[in-house]
Image 1 (tube, rainbow, N blue to C red):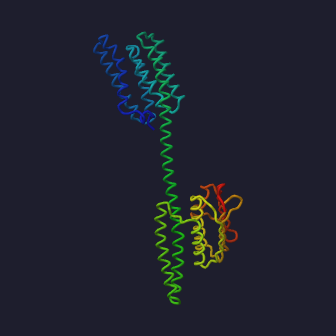
Image 2: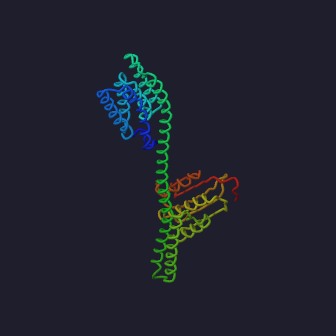
Image 3: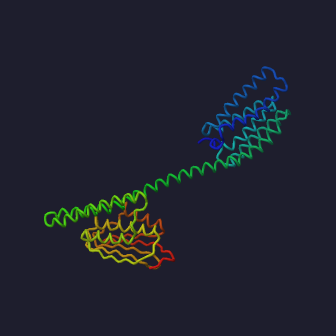
Length: 360
């Protein structure tokens, strides 16, 4: 991970901060430094610039190492040039961005100031070094603790937004998969049943076989329309139409259908979910249950919208496959519940909360 300051500071800003080096050059210029002193000053600047720019482009822990090295330049040059206090200021101001927490930044600044104060006291430095190296380092460093923490929050928010965006994409892919499964699973099962029926009737009753083949064609066209509607998000034709279609599908498959439906004023989202759940459940009865009778009942019970689908098929272990899992996710997303019992046949009970204004 790079220092937090990099993602928030434009590239040209670090060059502006270099203006503070004027104070390090002030003493050699005003006191007509010798050639040796100028060489030493130039060497300090070269080393400083290397670690200064490395701070902005390297990954941890190197930014912290750069801060330490910049502070070390100040320690070396403080006895000879009061402007070396700038290096302590740089170190204190950069440290909060190289660390992870406010407390770590505060401790680093305290360390920088302590080193500057001890050096000034032990070496009796009296060239205007102590005030900027301690007071300004503390003031500027403390201010940067706030900005560093703000940058950290911004980076965390960015990561959270990126994660939310990724999760949204995953959820959308899962929704599309459920939609296609619900739509095509039902329709293809119906096409298969009608095709088998047409094949059996082909020799005995060609006219009825022709009618079944025509139904297959119509169902296939409807499947294409359903897929297009699913992609556009407008696939449901309503719960009432789905109940009629469920009865027709069961009768076509040779399953006696007992359908009881009360008129409920449901929001579109809940009506769409119930329609898709009913479609998936009926598809499962036709394809897997080997049932002779299926009861579908929709009504209002204790302020809840209750949809119950029961068959007298083979039942089996209550293994939750993709279809059932998709049902459960849809229902629970609207605050409802789904019960699944396969001890005697298959029994599905779906309950969704009704609005207070809903009426029979």
